[in-house]
Image (cartoon, rainbow, N blue to C red; front, side, top):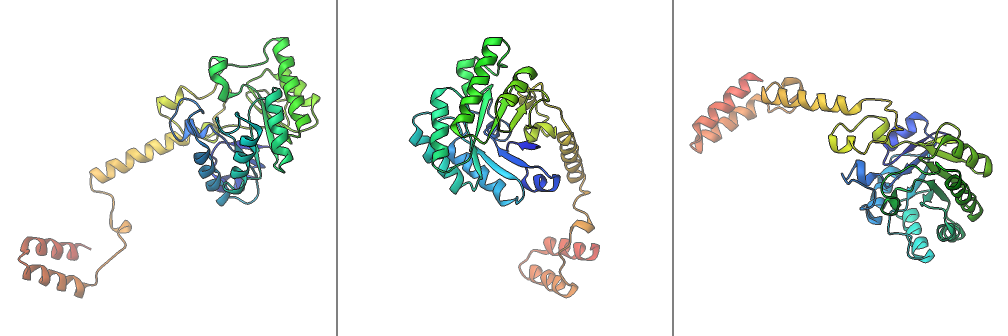
Length: 285
């Protein structure tokens, strides 16, 4: 299984043969310019989900439950998940965390008839408690916590799990301990599939603001940001030098007769200099 992550180009996902698209709350960072995923709202996530769903047919679509949309109660979570499914036109939802309250929430959403993807290891929505974007499961006891949370989410009815920022041994243990697909991100090669942020894997972002939040585990498979930067610089140069737009990019024309009539009408209005410019332009093209 191969997955792309976080506000992907749906059309590109189809063409590339991507199996699953996760419209992730990392959109807060790579699209909206925030330092964390916390500020993105449910309404904003639904908007991004709709945008992706309109442009794709093949992949399975999962919408991320943003911070603040499912923590208060299982009923709040079900209501938010229903909105993502109905308004965002997703095939399933994802939520973070695997402790007893979160497993219960996952079970409630599954009971409502909605496919749920779990998420264990680093939970970016919990960085206030974790003290930042810190890897998880690096001690034996913490690794067992991650494994137990994964099994609890499996028992709650989750159809798959994201494993984020854990050692490869932990990801391998989780994958063997549950009978549902595991999707790794910064978790090594021993998972059922992999997921990366679309903007990161394409090397789209060149601004220092984004560079400081690009994770260590991401391999850029392209340098799209560099290409974009060069294209913008070339555009500015050609506009400044009045090279663009040239004749090949100026497709709309007036017939000679209409242009001559316009010249005469401008002269009647006393706009002789403007008329001369129009006359010159007509001769030029």
